[in-house]
Figure 1: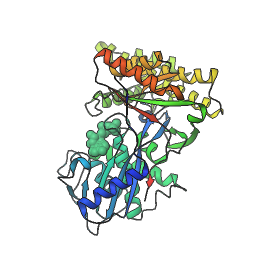
Figure 2: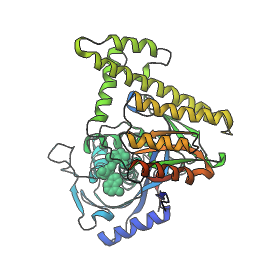
Figure 3: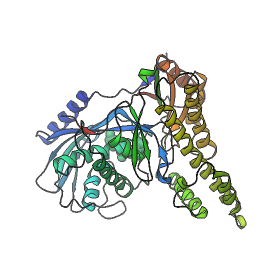
Figure 4: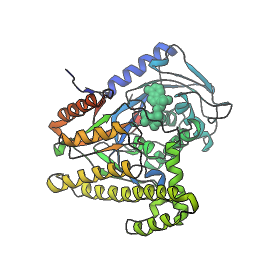
Length: 427
Ligand code: ADP
Ligand code: MG
């Protein structure tokens, strides 16, 4: 019988043990420590980050664990369970952005790239390091396995090189972490060549356990919004569609470029400058901007802008509901679910970044009793989320798995998403 498959998070102890064991096996030495950084899932506020809007991610209990030891030279050596036969070796003096002679292959770019970015941010002459990576963040599932890599490297380098940016897990230095975020984003953009905004890295470095992170992507300011679903008798089911998504095949860049064109036509710096009240007027101006055969282009700008502005408004409304205090029940719960549902519709119809696997997951979850469901992350595959009763997690998952089977899709995987702690040191 088809039991839905859940991807469990490694416990901190398991993660530390596995990363340390791999480090000892490959480098025949003791690491200086083990650092970790979580993947994230966004509750609402999609494709708003690069528009200067709001997002509301939580950190997942699924993490990248990095056992790392400082070196006295400028060499970086990296290994993961998948690459233990062939250790990646790089030199901090010669690595460079993607598309240059110093470009770094594959996942090593996300780790060594952080040192490269920090050096460009004024931290000269960083030490090299040996590191072993063990991650349980599903790869390419829209749950930000890439940011988990960058942020684990950021907190590790911060400590072994004495940069003093991250603070301690008990007393995180939020301003210092915001600076690490900037460097991790630069790593992803330039070293890995993925033009993503800052939501993923902010979530991984700046979230709080039991809370969602209200992130204002214009100025990087944050607020911690209570999101203790278990205490409310609720749960957040993540559905990893396993459908292939690729943010660097041009779709993501095309959405970003459309937003920039729309902002330019409207005479604003970022689409977040358009308020919900000003939206009808702004859409009229975009529609009128069509010249010659540009009608299709104008229609595209109208749709993209409508998504971004309404999504920021929905995010603000969900934050208000959550800040309003417990319990999240009755009308309040229904309203939260409706905001999530509306977000998905907007992403499907106006932003056109869902796919059949995401739409089927969302519909099946709703039909099985989810209070609200939506795609999350960049889209074009990746994951969806469903807000469900705490005792309904497995039933909703089974219903989604069943609908996938009916559609002839590959089986999805599931995660139970609990708002977890931000990046830090384990041992
Ligand atoms: P997402 O961040 O949503 O998981 P991305 O495409 O942004 O998807 O990042 C996936 C990439 O991150 C992979 O292609 C790989 O280069 C790197 N990566 C993430 N986790 C690991 C891992 N555990 N081992 C090796 N590479 C990883
Ligand atoms: Mg990513």
